Image (cartoon, rainbow, N blue to C red):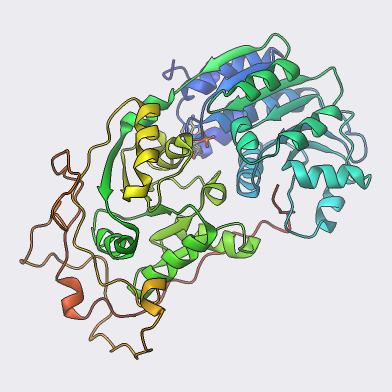
Amino acid sequence: MTSRSFATLRLAEPIQRALIARGYAAPTPIQAQAIPHLLAGRDLLGIAQTGTGKTAAFALPILQILASSPRRPAPRAPRALVLTPTRELAAQIEDSFSGYGQNLHLRLAVVFGGVGQDSQVRALRPGLDVLVATPGRLLDLIGQGHADLRHVEIFVLDEADRMLDMGFLPDVRRVIGQLPKNRQSLLFSATMPSDIVQLAGTILRDPVRVEVAPQATTVERVRQSVILVEKPAKPGVLAALLQDPSITSALVFTRTRHGADRVARGLRKQGIRVEAIHGDKSQSARERALDGFRAGSILVLVATDIAARGIDVPGITHVINYDLPNIPESYVHRIGRTARAGREGTAISFCGSDERPYLRDIEKLIRCRIPVIPGPAPLKPPPETKERVAHAPARPAPRPAHPPTRHQPHTSRGPRHGTPARPQRHGHGPAHGHGTPARQQRHDHGHGTPARRPAHPPRHKGHGGRPHGHR
Ligand code: AMP
């Protein structure tokens, strides 16, 4: 199926040229399976997660359908609507549409909350071919008379299970209530909880069902391991882990926004190029962080589940679960950020004794046992973790002779791989060989002291005044 070319999918020449420009040689399985049905006007239920190429699976046929029946859109009305849960995802989907549609002359826009709406209102006014939106802002705009969904020909509900997790289903239903009955509808979801099955039943008509990369496929491509480590030791173990030179781009997950900030601060103090992204950050700060991460000037991005939704950064070598998610599906979503597009990836999860039930749930979902590996000896915890600052007098940190870098040569002392940080209390697996060097000497050499490496100036992507927002 993957050897099929885009030409056999009967995609128009300007679209094929855009795909060649992006270096796409052949459709991914979901594209090969979905595109012919979508071009034939069928409704579709796509069970697929990000990383499978699902965005192009709906964007390409939508572009083709719209371009082959050009018509002047009604004022404030989109011809195609893509509803997606987060602003990052919305911006990325719109980026994909504009990339795949670069040789077409279609009008696209994205709207989401958290930013001013004026530019969004202006973008909507003349009518659009494609509108990508998050539900809350779209409803606001509809309520104010700035958007009109009565002329939608194609509707895509993306990441439906995330919409459910994030409590957006009532908003989604309200948006659907605005759509005309006569339309083509697509629903994508990584999982199919009963609420989504029900929703699919109400919005899709005789849909084609396409299911690709069942979770196990992604899961299998990722080398997974668990380090049993209690909460107070996590900062030091994380900092030690990140000394591994094979980690060239790491996404670290925390359960809370607060936690993300604390972890990022701690790592920064260890001289690691890090940024945090979460819902409290401004849109421009999030974009700067993501751009830096993509460009490689930021080594570690610390994120919450919601903020990480839709992050599409090829080449993430490691996903580190600083906290285990309490929703097992989130684990699968998280580790799917690495091992993208056929690459390999590594996921390392910290698990405190209070998180053992989460680990059991995850193992049940993915139907395999995640091997426990010994953690590296912790680097000195950064001085501002709660435990340390509580009563410790402020002490100016000595300047290190030279700033620490991650890519220092290995010292001859200490083994490189899987050195147990402490006796394994729960250990039930051998060291897994994830290339986790134990650099316990590092802080003895004064490397654990604060030292900021000058980060490369982040390349600002600039969305050309395109509207942004969330929800
Ligand atoms: P998605 O699942 O839509 O988030 O896409 C995952 C990644 O795969 C994105 O970086 C896409 O640019 C990329 N991608 C999508 N389709 C193809 C393809 N046919 N060939 C190569 N890369 C692709």
